[in-house]
Length: 490
Ligand code: ADP
Image 1: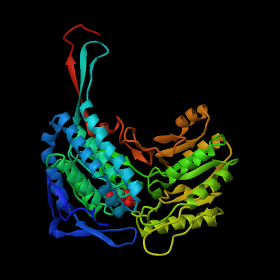
Image 2: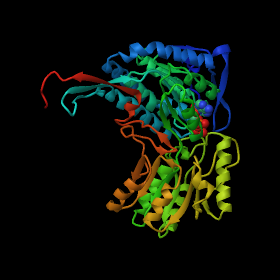
Image 3: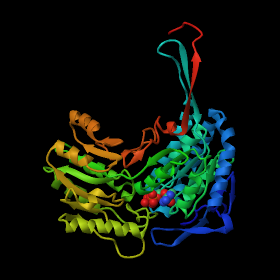
Image 4: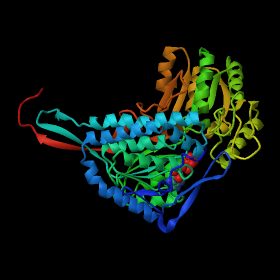
């Protein structure tokens, strides 16, 4: 029965200082089901005052939390990991309902997102500084790592759980407190996550969650507050730039996970079937609504027809429909705006001379669906090659040489993820060095991994989430100078 996994009435409020409560003046906003546009739930609509109270709670909890034992922080994360694992089905259904993805994809996200909690439970006890002899031997250098302080997390709608845990996990591990503003389109999963972390023993005030329909006003107010020391944002480059400007006054530390325009390069020596398998994952994971999604397929001219034909065959067999239906492969997109902008890109590409191999339209009826689409013969300067598509559309263009492939792959302001299919090891090494991307996947369509440093360069932002690097975003360094008191050099 849809709806059994929706959060209870309490968990549709604001979570501040370890308590659930209503927003100022009882304000609420609605969350819609993208499969039919119906109302799923109302949640509290936090005001600037509510957000300030959340920061009050985070600031009050910071000293005690920062001084807590790393092992205690690790155990809380590990308990939350176990609780989430035990509630996989319920969380998957909830995410599927509010965001549209299929149950299978949502289960995958629960496993992936939860892994950040386990990974950072393991990292919490490995925070360390160093003891060093100065080069001249006259002094000793000591470094101390400290939690950076209260953080603001702003997350997007496409991965309602994982985009939260990859920030919350390392912040908890490092001893930081936080205010989380989930995406207004998909706030329900984050509210349940807050409840689970509470149950896992997280002290009041460490995590505060404030959904709002007024994101800009909230972030502006919180970032003007000197108590806030860090902002981690995942979302569009447009908003990211705004937040970077906003951080100037209080000089908050920043992590910016912004847009992408991932090239997917298939060389003449590639295993074409493996490349098609990889393309299906890199393109269709999350219906293409991922910043790592393959956005531009660049295929060697000798194999472009074969690759396009095989990809179109696979895409045409995908079943589009409501994400909770077990036979469905591709759920709805997030809203009508997404469908319209994707269709516009496809229409413009066809007008510019591309050939529609499969798809290219939205089915009739309610909900925000778009048919899996393959376009061949895309002009390199086509708008679809410049914008993040964020949907189930694969535009293919061709290249003749490796030099051309690299040049075209790098000809974008973005630099998040790139995919390469080749069987040539020397080429692989060259490309890993030449591609201006934070992440390069070779002969695989799956790039995200909690143990790896996820992040981009250029207009895709800066900072890394996951891996050993992930916790660094939440730590400050104090260097301590000490005179040498022995001649010991070793
Ligand atoms: P998308 O296009 O994926 O929705 P956005 O960058 O618009 O990406 O949204 C990502 C997150 O940023 C969401 O939580 C949204 O509410 C929030 N957001 C949008 N505009 C602003 C803003 N001006 N200031 C702060 N947060 C914002």
